[in-house]
Amino acid sequence: MAEEFDDEFDGPVKRFLFVNRKAPYGTVYALESLEVVLISAAFDQDVSLVFVDDGVFQIVKDQDTDGINMKNFSRTYRALEGYDVEKLYVEKESLDARGLTEDDLLVDVEILDSQGLSDLMDAQDVVITS
Amino acid sequence: MLHTVNKSPFEKSSVTSCLRLAKNGSGILFLEDAVFAALQGTSVSDVVAGRAKDFQFYVLGPDLAARGLSEKPVIDGVEVIDYEGFVDLVEEHDAVHSWL
Image (cartoon, rainbow over all chains, first blue to last red; front, side):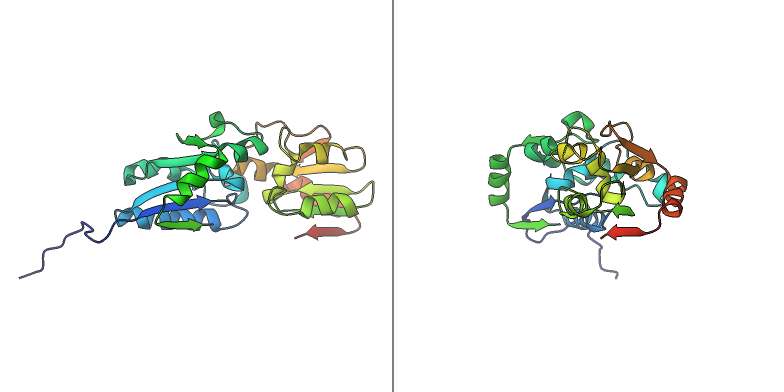
């Protein structure tokens, strides 16, 4: 008799925070982090993402990579909801320094100040920065 | 001399070092993550705008577009170019200095 396949993860659930600090395309960090986020979500972990420093550029809307022959992975951020990854945060100071506002972003986020971000980081079990 | 810079001015000092050490009259092309240096309204805009009379600034349009920044205003004096324009610049200058 075949063993019944169960795709429900019944191990421990931890609070994961992925801290995105790099701009997309110039380096591979943003794309690689997104892969790990999806893997974490597949294991039913409690996942949050924050975009800080140049990481805010990852979620700027209207990205068009046709001219640089690279994959436009910005749409994936909009799909995170479907993986129950719904806690997205952006640091206000990072937006301000780059002349960006919430209207420039392609996903709904909660805007935090540095103190709020500090508190968020402190409340995690696992923090992965890239 | 044509200087090319490809690192974010918010993360690395490549842009400011280039501005400090390039001879007046040089061409400076911002590409890849350095395209952020060409934008108005950022924390580094004034640093670049203040040197617009000393250098001919260029920014690579396809790299702006990839990052969703095509419609954002660039600093006065910065010319947006495409890859053909990049090739022309390399051909026009006697040497290229890449600030990696």
